[in-house]
Length: 286
Image (cartoon, rainbow, N blue to C red):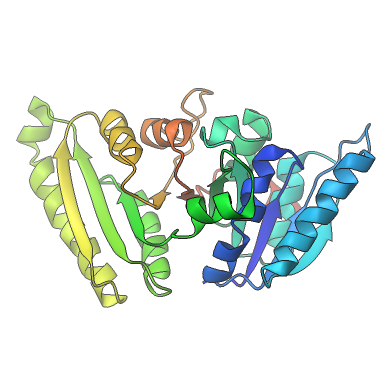
């Protein structure tokens, strides 16, 4: 599904999650990886960082991935998104500390800007508690075994379900499509629960048409951000797929459900591109 990926590293412990998940990149179809470390304009890498970068290149190559190292100068989100655009990558991969997007090795603003500007899906790979290949294999080795796809009743659901169906074609085990109906007088009057059931059955049918054999459509009641975060935290899923929005507040940069999940999840999270920032690509066309 993703023949080429941009793998973003900060050369810190969180980025070891990416390397430990190298075998999973192959399972996703990745044959070529652009391993990118965006260097600060004022400070070059230390000898220790040089050694870490070389070690990560070797680890990815050992997993059978062709690696193209890149060390651009400047602000990391621009460098990462631009490389994905220029090299026609299908995926960006970033490591996390297992505490969500806003606790990546990169600063919160950097990591959220990558998601905001990315033209392609972004996979957040949590680092294992002990950053070894064996521990990473436990975290990521069964990435497609049990996939949760929370959706709402907006057009964003189409983006996330299209992404899920693409994964189905390469071998998803169990797929659960979830909607949380916030019970209120307005929701009851507008028949939102009935609409949710109908919508989820439509997406489940699309997943079956793509080849899924174990598909579940689940509607629950409650606050969407709280319920989805609770279900993700249950530990029953190997991957969560979300379609973030483009809210501007710091604490809910991509909507309450997405923010709740990526702040708390120790499960890999795949984010469909929200297409928030087109300035980078408009500039590239001039």
